[in-house]
Image 1 (tube, rainbow, N blue to C red):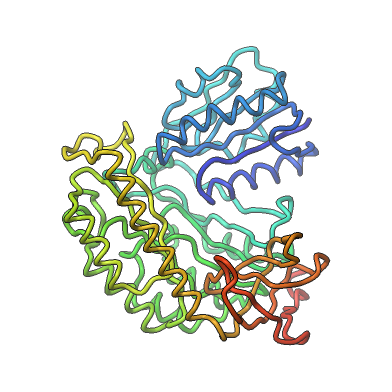
Image 2: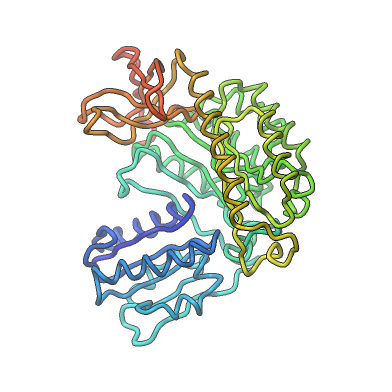
Length: 444
């Protein structure tokens, strides 16, 4: 059977799609590109914004144009929250909830044979099991992604994730070890360890996030490890000290802020205030001066006045960070924020987003310039035929362009960052012996 899969939304969704893909391949099915003729289409959805719901319908239509007789399975957060709306989309054969998405390959025969649309969306409870997921070589990527945590026990007023993914649950420490070892055997050069609320990692044996990081460090893996987004209130002094001395975990942290106004953070029901956030970021940079700190910000949240917006801008101007991910607030029907007063008109939201993105561009430029002349480890990911350059990232999240032949192997290279090159830095290889080739003998 020919199976085509596509992902909407976050990198964690992409990791889960990859896991589904790998299971289909292991069962002997052919994986084809989405938008090509196929027998089964799998759409893994997001529901962070209203636009994601609209995008789901577009993607289903796109798949059916190329494969009009195909069965269509829609899964993911939108499917969990709005199963009836998904089933109303022309051509959808089955809707599968988030807790069951990894098992779609085992459900395929039932879906293919059913004469009626199927609704397989069990409720998410404290008994919902963790579904492991990691990316695989099928994706031909240099970087692997490993999900070690899912769900969220927080109740942020703007977020549908707890309803879409359920309560927090994790992969056991021993299973994480096995997965990291498997990634080493598959020859990846980087692994992103991620979760919906990664910092709240806590398994049944009492292991917490700090224990997970200590285990990763002790494994002496033949690749670098990057952490996914982590909440500021979960970053302890112990975690910062471990990261400062780590040989494996790279100096790059993505730490959501959402607003620099204490009043808006309270309306959002975030678990920190600006003072706490500032302390965490300053401690990180104090111990790891070359670290890249990325920040999420939401503009136009209900009740956000121009004063609050300027507070956020001033707060960010005083902090050491490398880039922003700026999101314009959009109403979600299943959230408490929608019921709050003080709605901000869309034009104002977009103007505040524009200002922050402009600030981000300038700060990223400054961060890049601070890295010129430094020696870094560059991991090539893509090749630009027109310029003859490899593109990728350093361990501390500097975008790099390195001249080279297209046949060059995708493996870590020690480089010197020499000058600006558009939105990246141009690099030069230090010498041929600087190409890092860690031994895989103990992992094979």
